[in-house]
Picture 1 (cartoon, rainbow, N blue to C red):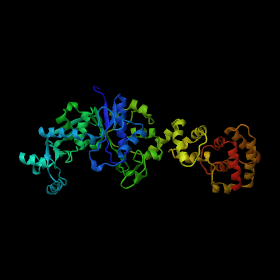
Picture 2: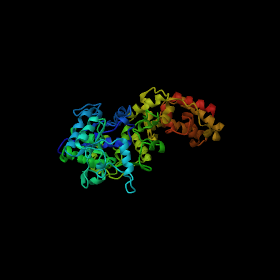
Picture 3: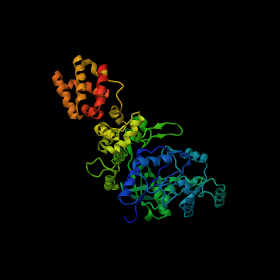
Picture 4: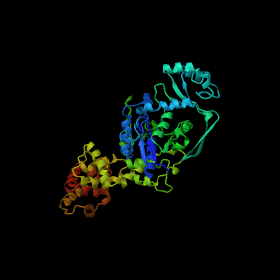
Length: 505
């Protein structure tokens, strides 16, 4: 690549960060790191009517949790700021005026009422939603239809927008790194507003100007922006020349059970769609995130990477470093990728199984303590995690799977024991507790041998005794191998739980 790779993620601070947005971040990040380039975040807040307090900070919190910190941003600084579009407002007007001067844009003075009347007057069966385009512009109030004096007067009044003058009957083309050559008929594209009445640019003008000024080499975004490409290509052509335009790629949609995966699908289908919990400041509605559900950040970006990309092999588990090494835009699919929550759970389970115990303990210990479970010894916690992690799909699963190591049961599944309980079994466990007190080597193998030897002496099948033993120690029919549980509980605690449970059984 001839020039330094510089890519950007340009979110609007309007709400929670959808997993599709995180995937866009991820692909940009991986591409930048693969080629030794820069990844920056630019906040696109020009539509102040949609601005949501707290959303900008939330976006950066999500990226930090995912381990996808930008090189340049509002928070990280950089040489191409400001990185918030509202702070760049003064830089856009000159480009809009240059477009008007060169005949590629014009001033429009239509009121909202006039625009609505246009939509009603020009509606036909073939065109139920008329647009402000080359067929209609000459019938509206703008600098193309008014005299120079009338235009000057309207400009002094200050209530106008600047629109691009889309040419009719031309073909605009560009090479998409994913989709190949893409063509557009300019006659089908309306005259988009570039500069609003309040002086703020729309996305169309701002994204081109900012990408130019920030020296963006590659512009990667979701395919929902593909229809805007002809406007952006012409703006590049008119303002800076097509030779300076970034290379583009449009990522496929992430699909849910019924088409595009929307922000509302989480509550509808019972799985997260946001990276982290998001509370709508207006409604107070909480939307659960992958983090709070109990996903590891590595698992989250791993599953997102494979939603539309693969490295050409059967490999499914990738570290971030492996993703950086193997990622290529050319292997991103052009078709939509369906999100499968069961597969997402599998990824997290695999990551939990493979993650170093010490790293897991930093995540698990706070969860246990938040649930009133005191962890007296980090070494014990590490041993517990090693023992139970294969049984955990989400981080909160560690609470159920390990709580009994740190707190004696306060209830027991008596219904599972009583139907087959008898005096012989009671005597067995009373004797077993006595023998345990005399054992000098407290290891699972020793405990299991002692258990089976005593069962043989009492002429009771060991299998009939293991379930009651488990319920004595745990409270229910779950958990890792029971003799491993006893080993970690220790002699005193194991004997105490047996004696307490026997009196209840």
